[in-house]
Length: 209
Image (cartoon, rainbow, N blue to C red; front, side):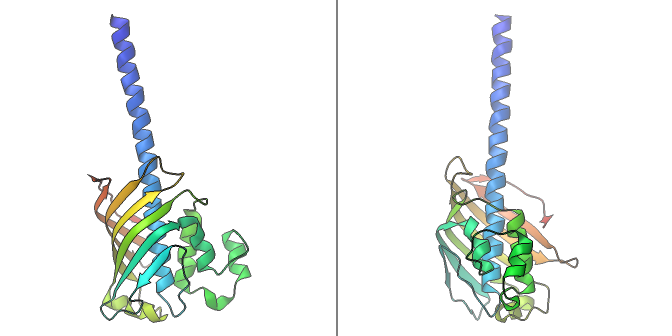
């Protein structure tokens, strides 16, 4: 009896550990998807040239109030790099991509974003996004809409996204707020608030990329 009890306790512990591991991987991939989507769309919209992203629709592209509403429909995150770099020859590494495109097609901000996307890259079909994001650009960053990258960029994004794909075990509804601020060293500070995954709230400390 004692041996059976110990075995049962061990089984429960192992299952709990496996569940925690799966959960952390699921949340990690979801957050990587959030970062990729937010940064890709912001870089596509901030500048005089606005490349289209697969499965992404933008409403009020030059807003008077600094707010841009974006909808996603079966949008594959893996396609964003080629769209932002005008690269139609398949996937290339960061250096090859930069060397292959015209200098005017990549603004300094977009260069940084493509670097982030390459670092947090997904294979085709791994993460698919549906839903909406409302971007709010700070007044100091408004010139970014027209390609004038003078001040450091800061914006916020209110998101309600359904994520699916082979990198996720099931559909995940991600809701919450993301604030992004370019800091002095050129990296981006992310502040996450009111973030829920399938209704379960999770708190994240600020992090830089």
